[in-house]
Length: 458
Image (tube, rainbow, N blue to C red; front, side, top):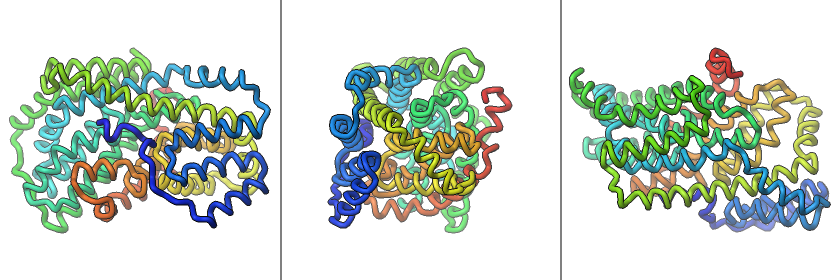
């Protein structure tokens, strides 16, 4: 997990063209201090600097040269900004996902999924989609889902006669379900940035997550039927029951986390802590696939990823604080409303902005930087914050599956031993499905809001 657990930490070798640099300088001079902050951030990121470092340098430069914000208030905000109970959910969900990835849960979920849908066209591919959906419901991380499911099912698909490109496309895109089907680390990030309810976001992600899993499975089935890919023999009900019994301990984590949140037994943060403890017990003492001597490495990998995410959050909190002090979100909201943008055109602009941002940044940074800017505009236009959160999450899914910084592509590249260019071609059928689903989520808010309303959470 250490290779995939440092979002934003891997520098990109990009040189800034002089034309772009000149444009940024002109915008900074004409736009004043507010434009300078964004231009500096963009310029630093284009140099290949990690997003977390670029955020920190932008904040410090702006703080000491272009604003009169007291240093004392910044120091106070540095600590109080991350002193949120919801943030504690992030390291716990990361730890739970790492225990499950190393603890044999994925293999048993794949066996169960194969017994249920393996006899249809593209059987192992469909089993991969279903297994990704199940694992997403216990991990909260897309890269963890790609590694856990892909490393097991891809060799089996190639051995059975599937083209490697087909299997890579299925796993790379289905792994993105890890941030839409709750629990989701990206949703926790959105909650931190906007103070939206984590519980309501988790509930709102259930139906869109299941709908996207169905559409990805439908795409897999259609392509497998079209090209005549192999299918497994139909499992008997006795075999299905046996596979279910073997995977029940992993599947029960879905009940523990989501059932506890829906019933009000514990908060999402407490659910994350319960998930980490439960995953540890299952991996070490029940399935016994994780030797006790490897627990220390899992803890170290989880701490490494958590530290990087918390570092990004800290810098993003300071960046958001400076934006608020300079009244940038309010100014942008007034500007957009002054242009006469209605809800439909605004949501279209949001999608375009987020898809473009997904080309150069990873999800955590995008959410923490752009959510505080988009949130007040959405509220003024009557767009529900929970709907906006699900919309942003789906955009992040798409961004993780296309270059140049699609994290799922790099993870899948390590699993499949395929180049990024080859993977980019392989994922296109499923990526187009995700883009079509994004349109549905954008303009059908009840898809996200119906279940939270029924449960009285919004």
